[in-house]
Amino acid sequence: RKLSPAPYDNLGLPWHSSRAADALPVTPGTSYPLQIALSPTAKRFRAGYRIRLSIRGADPRQRNIAEIRRDPPERLSVTLGKGTRVEIPAETPIRFAAQRSSKAPIE
Image (cartoon, rainbow, N blue to C red; front, top):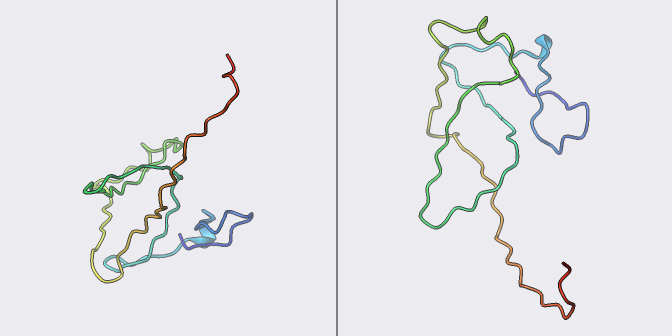
């Protein structure tokens, strides 16, 4: 689906209306840009750790999944090279200093 204007402030994340009118016809063998907004999460990676990217299509809310199964299954290819990128936002870790209080702890 092509990107559409969001009907509300969605913090600038990509928005797909899911309307038939906004379908983007594709040609087999042609590359197309794809933007997917993921749920925010946090993970600390130590030096030397590696990140694996796994792309799958599924929606547990899809009730008629058995009706729309393809035989053979559709194939999604990711071509690595010029123009391919995955953006992973990173922040400098914030270290909180322990604060000492003269008050007795609440029990």
